[in-house]
Length: 89
Image (tube, rainbow, N blue to C red):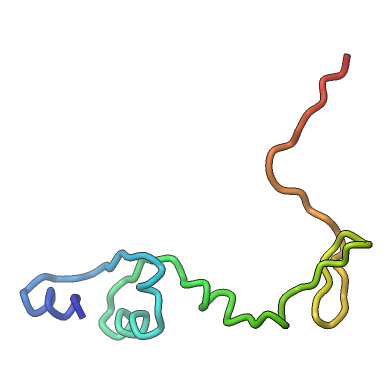
């Protein structure tokens, strides 16, 4: 690892900053064992898991809502993005 080379060169490493690739389990364990702080986004595989195609939600076109694998339908629709305001004359 590059951190080991830096430590061997005499650099005192306290914080490691990286992208989502640095948030794998071995790097998290290494920084905890060596009392370092790791600053990086969590990899989507860590936060969402390895989701298979059959485990995904299904879209019910008639209701216009998503249904989970157990058969439960979403309870509400949420709109995201900019709101369009109409001008009242």
